[in-house]
Amino acid sequence: MTLAGRTALVTGATGFLGGAVARRLANEGVYVKALARRPGRDAYLRDVPKIEIVSGDMLDAERMQAVTQGCDYVFHVAAALGGSLSHQRKLNVDGTRHVMQAAAAAGVRRVVHVSTIAVYGYGYTSDVTEDMPQRPGRVPYNVSKSEAEAVVRASSVPYSIIRPGMIYGPRSGMWTAFMFNLGKRNPTIFLGDGSGYAHPIYVDDVVDLTVLLATHPVAEHEAFNCAPDPAPTWREFLSGYSRLAGHQRWFGLPVLPLKLLAPAVELALTLRGEPQDVPALIPFLQARKTYRMDKARRLLGWEAQVSLDEGMRRCEPWLREKGLLP
Ligand SMILES: NC(=O)c1ccc[n+]([C@@H]2O[C@H](COP(=O)([O-])OP(=O)(O)OC[C@H]3O[C@@H](n4cnc5c(N)ncnc54)[C@H](OP(=O)(O)O)[C@@H]3O)[C@@H](O)[C@H]2O)c1
Image (cartoon, rainbow, N blue to C red; front, side, top):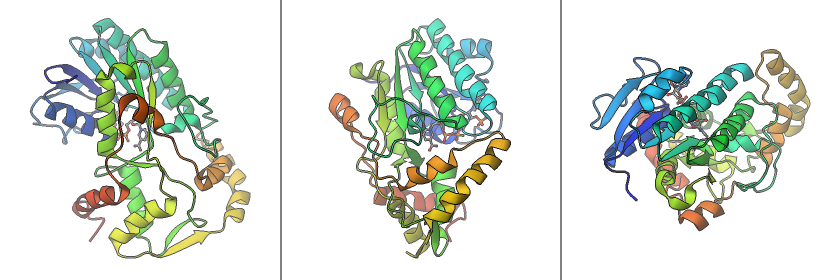
């Protein structure tokens, strides 16, 4: 079923993924209401046909009701990706509640909620499927995104949930700009031999599945991983960036001293109010596990289309434009 001619609210439209979702929808003939919390962050969407920038904060329940009126679909992409548990709970849990309440009041056909593989936590060291229990541990992002999913599932509104891995591509601050700088360093410095699996998924693939989940009949009330299956190793992922930077040298930090240091680092982070489960993170980064994509293949016939090599190639012009790659 096509979305063309429908109206959709996109939260987080001024961000990396939300901007890409908003543009794809507009391109497909959807009338997009792009939620912008802060004026001046909407440059990527300004003057794009079929996109209307609507100001609003998801913490403002009344405003969310107003902007959602008349929408057929909601793509709930906005979130806090850092900060203390109370900060992230406020945005990710209360914010999501307001979005779902507004969607219910507006009678939308479906909300696509953007979650994350982080809801499974760092504890799993073998393959992860959607039906496995969420064990977000003590990391504020993981906890609050897991709780946000619970809010979505408890709502009366038809929904579908996508759980992306590490979304990379042009405009990605974390998994392209930051990781490119890590890969560019000669030698690239990382944990051990980098043979643990990474979970980079190209932004266009995430947008693709997000849009499909809005209308696919079988996707209703279901959650789907969105990660590379089979997963590449961290070394393959980072080497993609080092190759762009013109080298292939690697320096593996010895794992044992890092493991011994981990509790102290975790204590410091905890005192700052942002625990990251560092002792669990090290085995997590070394684990050879895949977030399995069998469910999307089986139920939706969906498969990611952009290989890691191709994704890296597509990042190159943006890295040059940003002055990160000479
Ligand atoms: N990036 C990844 O690798 C990744 C992986 C898995 C899942 N995800 C999920 O994907 C989604 C988008 O991530 P992203 O990387 O695109 O993040 P991002 O670039 O930081 O964008 C976050 C967006 O949320 C908006 N926002 C935050 N608080 C808000 C509020 N109170 N009211 C309205 N809008 C608010 C931000 O607005 P401002 O512009 O005003 O800050 C921004 O538009 C999130 O749900 C995240 O959990 C991301």
